[in-house]
Image: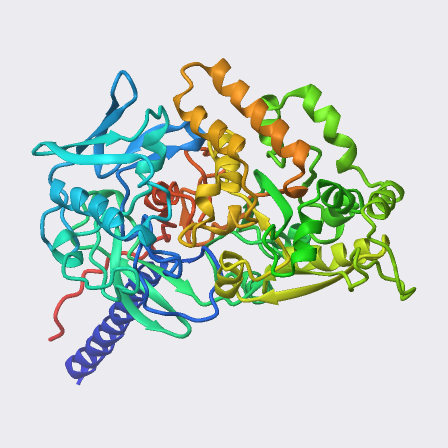
Length: 580
């Protein structure tokens, strides 16, 4: 009887220990599953009204995780490290002594995500593609490239149409696509590339629907040991209000959008919610110099009118209300970012600064001199013919800082008698309408580069007023002197000569008040430390931390991120012997 009782007790103990082991195993599995979930990085580079399986790197409507993450560039120039080249598909580049050509040495051993080898023929094909289809050339590469040839098995040589000391910065923006796929595409501009083949770290598109998509690992990525994330998750975020309501829940890991009163509306919700606001370029009001109404077009073309608009604006108020204090008043009439103030000609700046100050009395005098008066006593100024004058400011729907800025501008211009309405449209339509010249006025920000040249080139080079280029120069103002100076900067042989070119550019743009600079904004960067570590920030300034599609350094950033390690479950080892 005693022996039977003992055996029963041993079996009970054994069962309890087995149960404990089962519980322990489930805990371990749960931790492993949690780690697996931890390796999905949720990022919001931009807003989309709808999710479309468009991963064509030449399309302006492609999904915002296409560049860098699917199509790796030849080189990334690190703006936080004095533009140091970070070699990707290329391992070296060399300019000719006379700056008339450039060679790139390509990395060996790289494979496309379908397992086929990346070769020099893919690079040759990509350059020939934008030559054959100029509408694909959104970076203006064709105007510089005379010919491209194979120098050796892994070296390509590009002959330039004219010397350019900075050509590498432009050429590396060309997406490199696989010849074995794209040579079969009949219409590469309209091709959506739903099943992309790339060289980047994340090329497999999974679970795509109207709520978002997962973009997972390239099984053949050449630097797989540096990648610690399984998938990128892009959730559909339709506008700034949608974004703000969701970021405070901790849903997102890496974002770059405007948050009003960011301390209260974001950082205060969790110690893991971090942000940086490095200085950025200028937000400007610009006009359509080929407006459909001939009389309105003639008025817009008068510098006195544009100056009157500029002097009607209370810029600090725009920052306080629309940007919640996140910015700095523009005082450079050229619109050049105040990050580059050392490039400005002080005398020129002082000469035109008066038109950047709020002075409604002088604004009214200028409008009176233009015969823009209230001819029918309805409280609004009219065109010289007596026809009603009304401006409409176009902004992208959901860009709350832009939308609020436009509303405030309408109120400010009302004070000098100019009737202004605002119109918000989705971003795709915003770009289309600006490209087609279907607007009277609009707001835009501008890209930044290592020097002020990128701003002046993007904003005022008349070559970029063609449909395939971004919105920045679509005011359609043309100046042959500006174009000539822009052509001089890349071939200037000394820093002093480059500075002189910027002085001249700044002076011309300021003297003609081509755009109306409003304020210098900041670059928005938010990150959540709960799930990932390795973020680029003030204590880890390895490269730009931005997630935007126009920020190639985001590839360096994503490769630096690692899941936060979970603490292992502590449990004593138990020696279990078989029950009798």
